[in-house]
Length: 262
Image 1 (cartoon, helix red, strand yellow):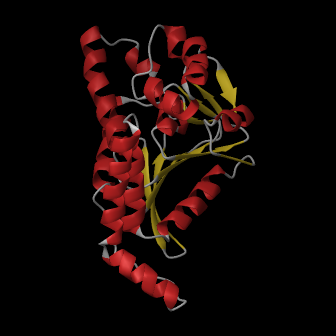
Image 2 (tube, helix red, strand yellow):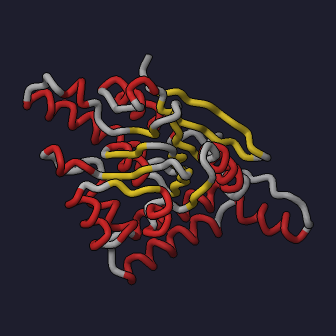
Image 3 (cartoon, helix red, strand yellow):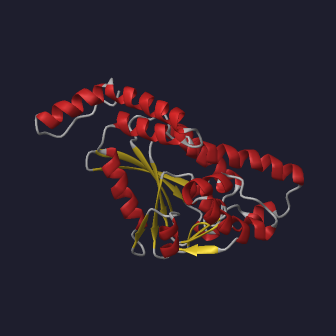
């Protein structure tokens, strides 16, 4: 058992893939086998034009993911820690690079690497049981899968520092208030809500959606003139596509579009 399950859905007319963290007995802690499988799964989904949106969810009642499996790490040498570090970076890098929009469905604990998994997604749906945290400093570590950088981009420097330097946990309501979660939903409904959002996204032009995500991601950390050039490139990609021609025709003919996706 590698701790990762992939489910495919058609929601409305939209094809959606769901990556499920499936080690509930370990609170979905990330071990090496699980990370390798996560990287493989994301690499397989990235070029799949039959997948228009991705949901990242988890099994079990208590946790989305509590981060790295510290039991596995307990007996590791420094060399083994560094070797596993490469596996972490590969897995999280493949998740971050997915061209499809990715929605995290969070319940229970999302701590350390679990919080970073959510930060690597485009949208975060949290139910009322969710608790987020980046507690690495409390055990002598620094977040290493985007936590220091992605938290600043989502929350701003001050709020990111509050989480990173104190290691404190943030409950769901505060997470929504500070922007760590994008939607707060009743307990037990995060998965269904995330899939519903994914279906809404998947009903839109796949060319336009991927281009918009690319523009947002590439525009991080660059000056406004360069960011507007990135946006212009995304606009041109969509405007010159068969999807644009179909979208305009469908609008004028008052029918649902059938996206070529080219």
